[in-house]
Length: 70
Image 1 (cartoon, one colour):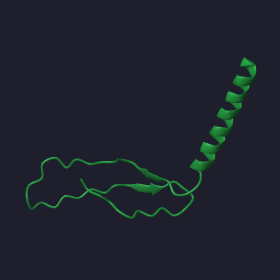
Image 2 (tube, one colour):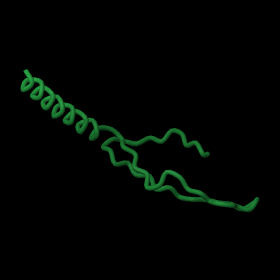
Image 3 (cartoon, one colour):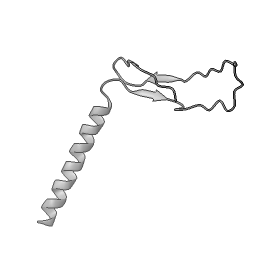
Image 4 (cartoon, helix red, strand yellow):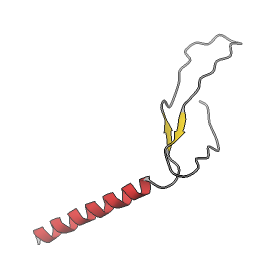
């Protein structure tokens, strides 16, 4: 009985791992080097900018529909 349970658990884990890895390869996948940037103190009237590097590591088109600054 224990041997059957262990066998079922191992087979389930292997099958689940295959499903997860197969899902990882489909669709767009966003990769961002840094998620936030702190400008520190910026004097009023000063223009501050920063470039975030974003990469699509997936195999389909990545569409960024909205960016929300904080």
